[in-house]
Length: 248
Image (cartoon, rainbow, N blue to C red; front, side, top):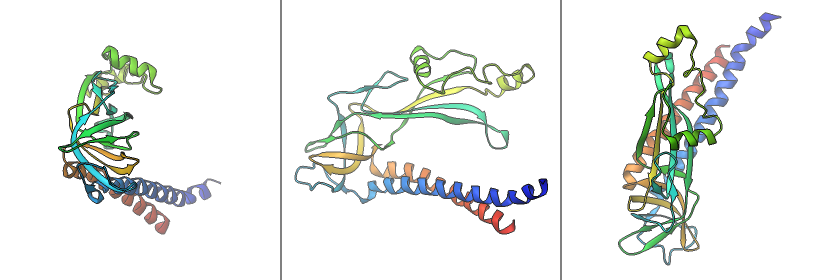
């Protein structure tokens, strides 16, 4: 009975890799298409008179009537992506920082251009903002109060893990490699920041697809690099799957 199961492994592995590759390629292609809104959009400095549904982009400074409180830093912002990274064994067991949690929030705000204030609606689908490191905490240390509260209130972020209480023989290795160390960072846009927003006009407001820091060119380079890397990984997984099916 073991031989048929073993003989079926290449086929199962090939199908799994093909499905995984197709999924990664689909997600990356969708992200790349959304990123392309920065290129496809017409640059404007006001949307009065622009037809509903038109794809435009505006650049200016954030002008907010109400704000969010960033979860780690406590800074006032209108858009924020909070990221928690944990140092874990990666490829070939080389320690690397792995994103274990991300959450994004946003509120409606305005972009002040030289000629008008453009209202931007929420929610925000893609945030391409600069990374701000808030704290780095070793596995056996306590995080700042604000971060500790966030972890308690977020499922799956508890600090009682194998890294905080490793088996005794592994404890020296875990400590020497800083495994379990967490980095807490935010990508946020705050009042007064320079931003570029691409989206579609909807009833006198901009329904945002991408909110980025600085110019559209900088955001496009940053986002397209991530998307192209995802496409490459997906294509590689699909190729491995196809090879397994052909050779199996």
